Length: 65
Image (cartoon, rainbow, N blue to C red; front, side, top):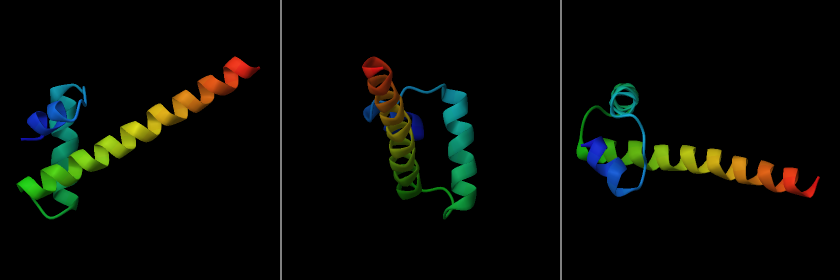
């Protein structure tokens, strides 16, 4: 389920790593369900988005130096 959701959201991640992280997530938050899978993908999107924004900000500073 998380592989399909990740694909729809444009998240490219190794399938095994994605499943492993999703299983850790479901143990911490409410067990396995479609809703939990969606919440995991939302979390992952935010985490990956923050990482890319940090990279873009750092690149802008490097260009100005």
